[in-house]
Length: 351
Image (cartoon, rainbow, N blue to C red; front, top):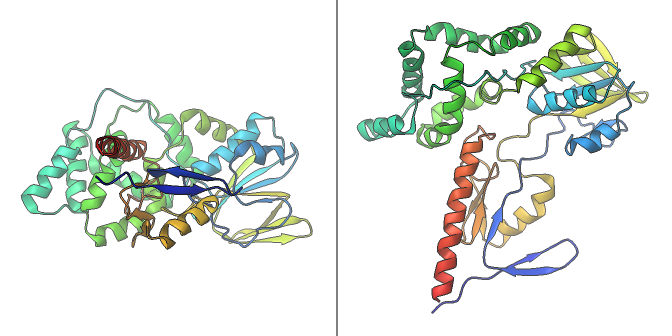
């Protein structure tokens, strides 16, 4: 009988390891250098590991953080916890901060579920974004709440003043209304499954609104929201939207916006990487898999295994949902990989 397939892993120090299977769990991509600042003193291209970044920041430095998502929140909160005294500015084209987690309740989604999505697919042969909105609309309606009011609040995320919105969100941590909780839970539990069933036109629409979607479904924890609010109220932190350019100037960084200019001594790039982007440290590995025919680039981004002994888990998995922070989806991928490895292990034992 055929013996188990063998793969060879070669490390940077030229050591070789023969294995039967390879599972890529390499994390998310590298943040894009949107302003071409790599190599300038005081510029951090990728904030992680965060401890290394913080070690380069002096307590009195004027820090500017490019981005306003969860990574940017981490970069702001961490030095504040160390007693940072210098001014901090979050720089963003849109200035959309993540929503704030609301306190969990016992209520689970009753309409936006995998079973209901499957029923729609079987009954109609397809699932559209309008179908999913219909399921979502039924959740607050059942609880006696106004879905249109909820939708209007979501739609205002890109235009409402970010500080005012953050204050309002902190005040609503214990709000009993179900709309946002259902959307957040369903986006991670049902979203990856529903994404595969949507027509490309609906996927394109969602990709165009990725900042707003991610701000809602990947919220910050209340403790970080409270720290941000404290920094904003004290004047130490500012959120600047509408950034036009960032340039090195005389050992500092000059930031140009529609409302004027400001400078910073330290600049941290906390832009969210593109979905299914290849991390810099994994590029050579991914290239070798593609060149040897063990995997291929997925048309929608990411990596798709060709050889059954190659597995991809996480954001790099080709064809995955554009909501890349879904822990349930990653857990499901990991579970499928484990089952595949077990099945191949049993096959190898029989041979």
